[in-house]
Length: 282
Ligand code: SAM
Image (cartoon, rainbow, N blue to C red; front, side, top):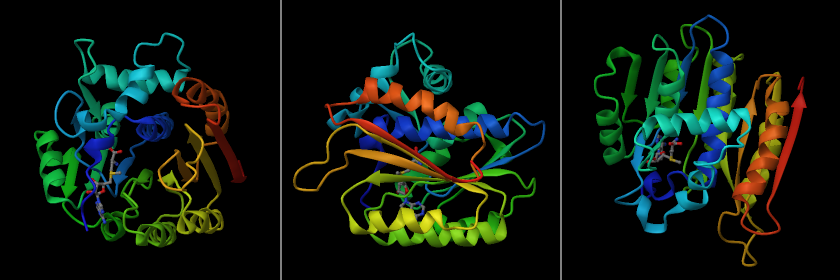
């Protein structure tokens, strides 16, 4: 079942939270003068047009990146993220939005490598085209990312961010995330792992987080941005979250500054709020 196309959602509030934290984690890894890898199990198409095609259908970016794009009071971590989007739109009009691999390629040193998995044939093809000419820096496989990461862990430099960002249309994704993290930690205990998830009233969702908190990592961090109240019928995504294992010690403080700002500017009703929780040595 591969009906999900990320282009419909490009640049929405969930992408803002995910890509902002991704960039923050990569910048932290980049502070040390040592190589590191970026591994993306569900890479999507890499880049999206906001002026034609799927993204224009519901124009979800209008309540996401478009609300931040022109602001001049951005906290530093939000500004680092918006700068990536601005570099993709050098004429000053918001026409394109970077996917997670693009954000990574933008902020990582040229010498550091990206390993990307994408199962959907069309998105895998667009991803290839978006990174044509990147040489050996970017390797793309049209494959199941949950299985694919086994072959790339541990990465040769023994430093990496692994982003796990499935569509969750298939309910087995919740269990697949837990299994992938368990196996990942066995192979590469010191890796930084970031999982995106939707805030939904689903039993699988409620069970996933407690299980992830018990995994044998140095620490965990849960950050959620709820842009509106949950709908009365329990359907629909009222927010999203990032769950991080082996997070840098600086991340809670950064998010304490960023999340209230995002609630203020991306919130859609009076129930908008954030959640920030940590465990282990954080
Ligand atoms: N990470 C991307 C970003 O932030 O720009 C968005 C990814 S989107 C939420 C999820 C992607 O996973 C879709 O493009 C979908 O085709 C792909 N996909 C679904 N199941 C997969 C699997 N088992 N392995 C790899 N990719 C998969």
